[in-house]
Amino acid sequence: MNGYLKISEVAEKWGIKERRINTLCLEGRIEGAVKFGNTWAIPEDAKKPKDERIKSGRYIDWRKDNKNDK
Image (cartoon, rainbow, N blue to C red; front, side, top):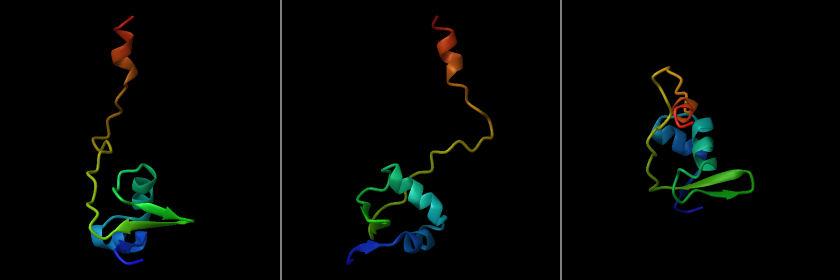
C-alpha cells in the first residue's frame, strides 16, 4: 500500500487516539481515506482535520432558537 498509512501510523503521527481517527474516517473528514474490508487506508499527505467538537463543557440547546419561531 504505497502512499497510504494505517490508522495506527496516523495516530502516532498526529498525536491522537486510533479511535478518534476511525471516527474521522467514518464521518468522511479525512480526505482520500479508503476502506479495504475492515481496514482504513489514509493517504500519507492527508492533513489532520480541525477538531470541531464542543470543548467548553456547555450544552448547546439547538431547540431554544426554534421555540421563538412559533
